[in-house]
Image (cartoon, rainbow, N blue to C red; front, side):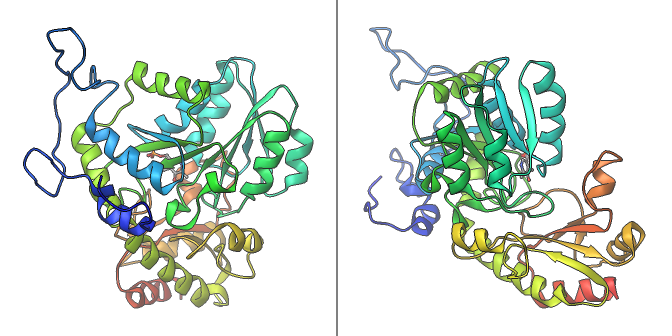
Length: 380
Ligand SMILES: *Cc1c(COP(=O)(O)O)cnc(C)c1O
C-alpha cells in the first residue's frame, strides 16, 4: 500500500486501498481459489494463512478497505448480511440480555425472536428512536449489547447513534449498528461511539445485485471480536474468493454510486411529498421527517438512496400503483444500480408491523426524470 495517509475515503475506495498484484504488476488484484496454504521446511506457515475457511487474501482486501472507510480496527466479511449479524449474537452467551429495535430488517427480526430466543438470549425490542425508553430498558450488568439499525428498513426511522453509545457504555454494554442503509459514505458509526458496525454488503457496498455478502467492523480487537472471528472461522460463513473479489470491485464505485442515488432519492422524496395520491413520504432528508434532525447531525453528504412512500388507498392502492410501473423493477433487495420497488407488507406476511400502504423504493442510477415520470403515471 503506497497511498499517502491523508487520502480521502473516495480515493481509498476507487483504488481499493492500492491493492494490486505485486507478482505481475497487474493493477487489479488476482482471485485466489486455493483452499490451503503451504508450510515451509521448518513446518511454519509461509504466509501465516492456514486454510481458506478462515483466511484468504480475497477476504483481507475488502476487509482492509472497510476498516479504513469505517475508521475501525478490523473487519470480517461474511457469506451474507444475515451471517454477519447473527455472528455478533452468537458471540454472546446464553442468558445475555440484548436490546434490539422495533423497526428492524424483517428476516433478522424473525431470527432474533425465534432462534436467538430459543438458544437462550434474552431479546427485548424497544423503540430506538427514543433514548429515554432505551435508557429505561437497559439493565446494568445484564444487557451486553444494544443493536441499532439506522435508517431502518423499511420505515427509514432514524436512531441517534451517539446517544445510544452513551447509554450502552454507561451500562457496560456494546453498541452495534446495522449501517446498511447509511453506508460509510454518509455515516461512520464508530466515530459516533459505536463498537461494531454491520453491513449487508449485498446492498450498496457491492452495489450490483450480484453478490450476497456481509461485514462486521470493530472499534477494537478485543475478546468479543475474537469470538466473532471464531464464529466465522468455525462455522465457515465466508465468501467464495470470486464473490469477495466482486465485492472489492463493487466498492471501488461506492462513493459515486451512493452520492448519485442519494441526490435522486432526495429529488423523488421532494417531488412526491405533497402529491395528492401520497399519504406520506418517509425519507430522512425531508425536514418534515421526524428523524430529520438526528439524521442531519449524524449523516454527512446525503441521506441515502432508500425511501418509502405511503400510497393513498391502502394496500390495494399501493399494489395497483406498483403493478403499473414500467421502469422500476418489482423485486426485493436494494442498493443496486437498477431501481427496485417492493410492497413490504406482502413479503413480511400477517405478523408484519409495516403499514399496508407502504411501498419501499431503492433508487438506482437511471436518469431521475425517468424514475419520477414512471412513479407519476403509476400513482396517478
Ligand atoms: C438485506 C439486509 C440485511 C441482510 O443481509 P443479507 O445480505 O440479505 O443477508 C440486513 N440488514 C439490512 C438493513 C438489510 O437491508
